Length: 310
Image 1 (cartoon, rainbow, N blue to C red):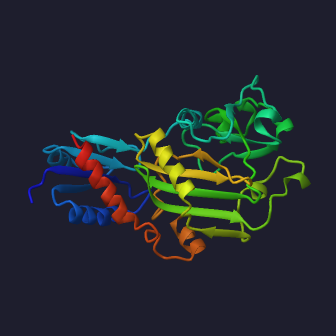
Image 2 (tube, helix red, strand yellow; image 1 turned 120 degrees about the vertical axis):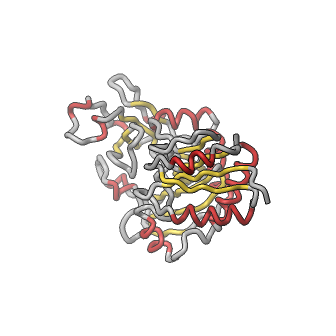
């Protein structure tokens, strides 16, 4: 069949395994013979591939923001790091259940009426991740601190800190749903076996007090329709970010809350540095199996290419 469209997938061998994208490319070619696929490295200008891809309507997909590779033509979808407050503003504007938040300034009002008895203090700059500089306090004890009062290297020196309502899940939990254009590819749900026991301590609290860590944790792939649906709605709220790792919590009353989507894109959970941990904790070797992730990704990319390649 004559080629009509191009799909350019941009990889980064410093963050994930490019071979994943070559597998997806083969699925794309099986599903849509009219689509020619190019797999290029974000750190390379790839002049030959760039020129060839410019000859037809193209769609460019990159989990991360583009680096050296810059397409001559095509609709571009790529990761986009953004300040946490801006991210939460977009999710809130879309009507999603985001826990109450505010930038932590000297005059920021902080009350139990808005935040409840416990309040998170988090880093707000665009590259904060993996719970960096995250602390939990009793709400009455939260205070603004100027950046210079923090030690060298602390996230507070890179950007604003913010406060956010602590979600009481009964037992510490976290659930991440990885979506591509809103379609789930992988999930990881971890919940502590022991109940939350903050009232027994004075705070500030250590991560182990409110995050499911250590051996007393139950993990599973999450298939709950309401959680997957919330992740899809998160994509609708920020549709220019194709790969989203949605962190979702279910409180002890059963209500859902979305905390962030990690728009920078370093969350390709199948081969990033923490993939081995996911495999070990879940007791499975193939992380793509539960959602047939690579074939699903191919189907989603074919649909996007057919409808939006330019």
